[in-house]
Length: 110
Length: 115
Figure 1: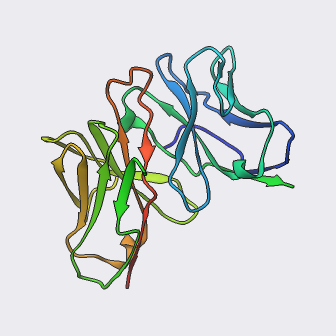
Figure 2: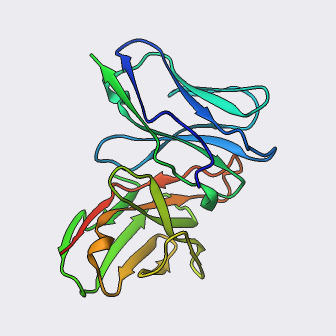
């Protein structure tokens, strides 16, 4: 049970921002929100994670709702290389608790 | 050079055969994991190890065994392979000292076909 809900797929256009939503309505106070992505024919790679505050790194931004029941991964300028399956994961602490659901396939159109 | 390597990258075997998938890492991480991925599905945890002397079952350990030969090496064995073990297998590592909720680093995967 991944305990997060994502759309099955989304499309975006190259060089435009894209917002990937995730619902985690049963999240507890100590759960972190992680995002990983899996490029075609590769293993998953870490994107970003957060607890309560919005987070930014070189790959993306993570916007967490004030009630923490949802979050949004923001790719500020999508590139073709961003086409991947994106996984939104909540973990209760400890890396072994990462549960990968089916994820969401992002298609980036040229 | 890749930090997490898996061998072989592809393997075809027959039902009933014993096979071993190997994972090595140069990241100096203490924790290692084995996952399988079936088409259209997410990853499911098979086994994980927090240290050389520590082995833990994951969500789907039946039919698999593991060995942590050294901190840098973690192997997955299928004692008697069956067709429904056909899948993509990933090894991952993490560092318990990463206090910001341990990022996992994945290998490139091993594609296994059991005939």
